[in-house]
Length: 263
Image (cartoon, rainbow, N blue to C red; front, top):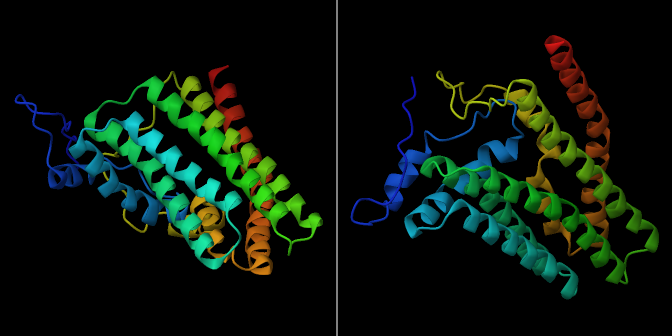
């Protein structure tokens, strides 16, 4: 049986919680992982824990972490379009995007462990994601356009990926909000009373790996070679393009069932 997470707030003397104490507390403030895409489940959320612990120890709010996250991602995209394509640039962009993704998870962990979550913070997080999601593919569009070794016909890939990624993001976020509204505004529990085994939903997590945002981040390690990058990026686009209508249809059926149950 899991125990409630103690809020990590400054003490009576204004002393901030220690990094180690926050990190320990974060272990019991995690969302369920069953069925979550593999990178987010086993890499991103775990990488976010020390970042969240450091933020709390430094006195940073969840909203401040969100702002840092978007700044890191913006730096990555700025480098992508401003510098000539190279292997080292691709690695740097991938690492910065992955760091921004981890910080995007860390802001929610900060909010949970300090019990400072708010509608305004959730709104800020979603707005940042709504901008960052298409911005990455639009930056790829500009970067490919500026490369002399890429024919113009390949520019259709980031255009299509922009549409697919925005559609997937909107489908997920809106379905979550409508589901909560249909259930009377009750959010899903952060920690179940009986935590699911570590391997729970393993097959689904692995199957969803190509749809994970982390894969988009790390495909930039191929940026130094136009053919390799286009192959990897195009494969992710194909898989996500096939996954999107299937996922959207499933969410539509779920929401319709909720509506019929309330009728």
